Image (cartoon, rainbow, N blue to C red; front, side):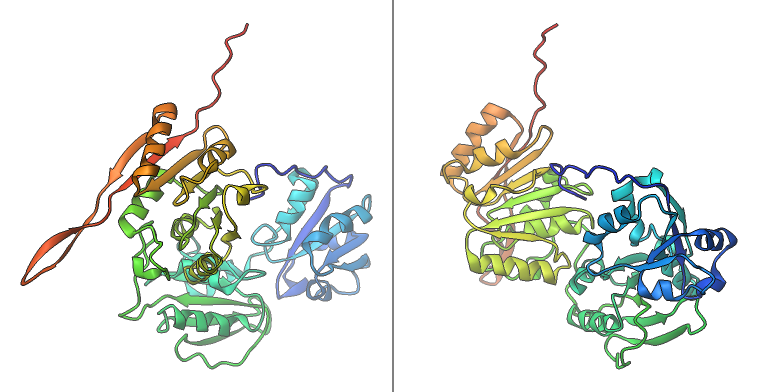
Length: 423
């Protein structure tokens, strides 16, 4: 999702573009409507592989996508404005395909989409897996580490491969994250005459690189000693690499509860420490976004390692001192301040950056910062609470309670401007 402050480009002056999905079975697998569009086309745009599936009877000018593809979409479409243009896509164009980029450039009304069954539909049909119960993770143009966020014992996953090396990379990640016993099936050339399936487990995966057109089916199985990472905030503290600067588990769960992440929203995590708040914000939904600001370079590097380990490598880390490092960041939906409250201007800068309806949450353990939060509570309202957690510990031959430092938390939603009342 683009930042709220971005301005969409002006629509391109082109006629309706037809988008045809094509599978590994090529021309033979296309319905009549798709064949007619391809035969009538003056310009055929697509990847080299897709264009190679068309017979000579498709006489339109063949234009392969350049690399990188996304920056070239607008210019290539503009260059063929007014021509009967067909864009070829792999499978369903609107499922992790070129359809998204075309819609963003042209608008849905300028597209006529003729989808083909997606690789996911084919894979579920071969495996006997209900599509609605199967999570899909794409690694096309994305780091393998993002798969880690979807790993849960007993879960079924379909992984869209970037190339022939992806299965081995997935097997290595599964072993590293404690999911070595997981069964892996690599389904190649789905729907084509050369369709094949490679079977094994992540622990024993020795298959050489095969066809680059593949989907990986994973039956997730964790080792008995694998660290359990749930689907809600409050991961175990030992899931993080840290130097003591870590929002502890129970306080973290309470903090994410009042931050209330929703799909597509952006968080500023100011004073990132180990990055745990931003990491768990991102884990709530794949479309969530987060920026962590951390002044210590070693902690900034540690945050990146934690994000990678826990499956959210898209976390953006800004190494710098707030409030100066906040300049130029995209407008947040929510701000968490975990450190540096007494730095002059920091709290005001965060508050000013929030749009109406945005949320701010600040935690502290010091009296000086607590006084600052109490003042803001009097001025802006919200909730001011004290979170106290005690853990059972040995006391001689008995057991007693050890109290952690209490955390004062201010949470508030920025009010919309009051109407002036002028008639």
